[in-house]
Length: 72
Image (cartoon, rainbow, N blue to C red; front, side, top):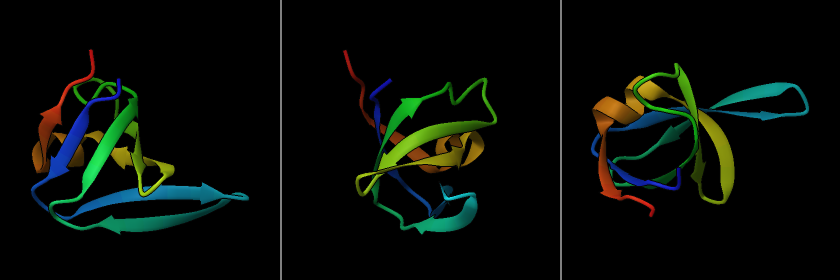
């Protein structure tokens, strides 16, 4: 966990506050941090983007993201 990805394509994520879900569009070249989940195994992973922890489809991160830095 803690790997940093740079998005090559626009990504989509889901924010949930007070049982209200909102789709967030993440622009190309945005940097996101994988905080929980396995992009090869889980349908959704938790990422940190602009200080918020949100859910992203693993496929979007796998196909539209480029590993920038891997945590130790």
